[in-house]
Each structure stands twice: as structure tokens, then as C-alpha cells.
Length: 344
Image (cartoon, rainbow, N blue to C red; front, side, top):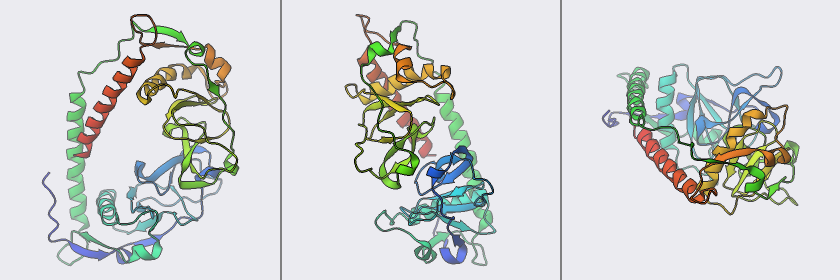
């Protein structure tokens, strides 16, 4: 699709185009895992920081709206009802207009995101400042936003994206599963010597902070990170470069930053290995997690006795160099595919 022509677009004041509101005071730390999106002030994953179980009788924020992060102006269209983060300076902003559809919502979200890049953590948006912001949109003959044009344009974009993604998937058609026939089995306790149980911090002991450090808990999602929190006096964070897992919901993740952790979190000290090698190991360790459901915890003594298969060198020892090289190739391929998708 050719570059969009914005010469004839008109300026619109955000506060005149949308009803602007904030969610009620909420923190994701008080929610159990569930099926409803918790939308916060992040700039990725459509603003969703966690999937939560609403509290009994709780009223959700209605979907078919645009959410905006006050931290950097990131904007996303929310099709379904959600739990919005509220109650603090970084509470999200919600924009509503009766003419909004999913397609026009995606269109305008992109425009808002581009228009509000001037805002940063130290110079945040608020309900008053966003009202006076000006965005440029296509307009009809009467000078009103051309909702039909936005719908039609985004429909073409989505159709083109589907076609390009199909082409992308076809280019990967020559890839095959890794041949593990020559790999050898190793006892995990023989491979690693340092299994650590970090200091336990319950949710009531941590304070959520968008610019804080990761808070790792027993979850299968988001690298085990529930949210970011402020450092806690007297508690030294666990080091970066280790592989974590939760005793229940056993899932292995490689941590690239120092972190704090919740109950029944453990880590293998893998700081002597390269990050790429650790990512490879994380995938191999994942092969045993199906044996440990929520009611049968994977504690260190059990993990040490487990076996995983790894590639080996000529002497029969784990081929750490191969693991590093293989994961570098995987990451380069992933970066290429992402660049292709972003160009769509």
C-alpha cells in the first residue's frame, strides 16, 4: 500500500473529539490470574500487563475505547471490556466516541501514538493536558472525522498484513525440527551445583513501580514477571544471568535483570554461561515441566534428579559453544522476521 496522503487531513482537539476518563483505583498485585485483560501504562502487548480474575461484583471498564499511557503517549484500541489501572499518576486515560469502531480505533490509536511521543516519564500526560492536544485526521466534506474512510483504510491494511504474514510463513516452510538423535541425557544436578531459594516477598510487601525492578512469581507468562516494583530495604535482589522457575506452575525463564521474587521461586545460578546458552538451556529444561502440575511442586531436590537431553561435543560433554551459536542464529532469524512484520 502506498504511503498515506495527509495533506487534506484536518486538525481535531482530543478533548472535543473524545470523552476522557480514568479507571477507578486498581493495582494488578491484588488480582489472581484470570481471563480479563489488566490494561496499564505499558507501551507493548496492547497495554496488557496481566490477565486477571475480576473481584466479585466488580464492574469492568467498557471496551471499544482507546487507552493512552500518560508515561509516553502509547495508545491502544481495546475491543473488549477490561480492568484499567487507575488511582495513581500513571493511571491510564480512556478515550471514547460513539462513532468509534475496531478499525477506526486502530487507525486513531496509531495517530495518537505518533502525536504524543513528546511525553516522557518525567513529563507525563494527564486528563487536562490531553484534552488540549491536537491530532490530524482525515475529514469528510462537512469537516468532521471521516470514520468511513478510516474503517476502509484499516480494512485494506489488515487484508494486506494477512497476505504478507502468509507469505512470511511460507518462507519458513523449509525449517525443520532440531535433530536430537545424537544428543545425550544429563542429570541436572550433575550439570549445575548452585540451586538458590531467594528471599520471599509477598505482594503486600512490594510496591508497584513502572520504572522498578522485575518481581518474579509463579506464573507461566511474561518471563515470570508479575510487574515491576520498588527496591525493598534490607532485601538484596537476586542477580541477573540466572534461570528461574516456580515450584508450582513450573516454568523456566532466563532473567536478564536483577529481580525480587515471590513465594516458591528458585533459580539455577547460570552466570558462568552466555545469555544465548542460557536461553537454549531454558528450552531444554522446559521439557520436564509437564510432569509437575500445580498440585505437585518442582522443588530443587526433585529438579536435581531430573534428566534433560543436550547436544554434546566429541568428548561427550555438553556442547556449550553449539548451544550459544544455535541460539544466536535463532535470534537473528527472529529479528529478521520481526522486521518483515513491522514493515507490513
